[in-house]
Image (tube, rainbow, N blue to C red; front, side, top):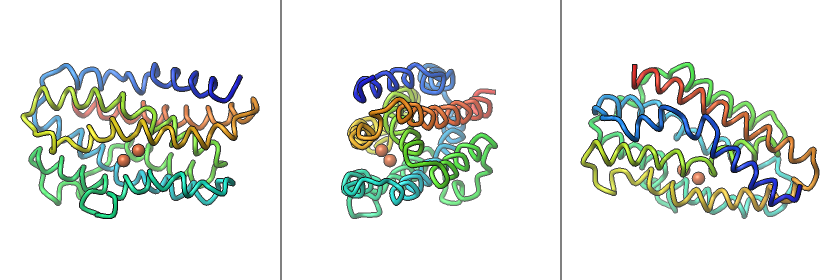
Length: 227
Ligand SMILES: [Fe+2]
Ligand SMILES: [Fe+2]
């Protein structure tokens, strides 16, 4: 398969996956939610948000392409907040947590669900120890590509249940737009390394590993939010 066609097929597979169309997301978008349910979701999800950048810094040194750092630059700039830490993505998430009634100490004291820990440890390990192609699959198609679809469900639920301003849910709406561009950055890099069937298989394995961890993460969130 041509690299472009391969990527499109993989993206289709991901969009239709149980992780991206998870019952939790569908229910979050359609059910009546209490502030406590939104807080419970937010506290666990924040743990993923604050470590994401590590997956990229783990992977970057092992990518053979000389321009990889330049390509990653736009993604890093967005993550770090375009030169102001007050707009870093974790900072935007903390703004959201505050607006749903949480105090500073809440997100430092939260007990991680086993599924949340498994997601984080799994990604730290695969980005540290696997080959760069596997890691690119997990971060590119696995994260950047899938996030806009998943977050659209989240935004629908938030807007329906809480009277929050656009600014208060900026973390989510901004990712629905920015991650389309971030996925393109990853795909530009990926295209060069998926000319062969082996390359395509390896990339896909990494993406599906991430998607499996994501499914498990939503399983855990579903249990604590909707039980
Ligand atoms: Fe981000
Ligand atoms: Fe992103």
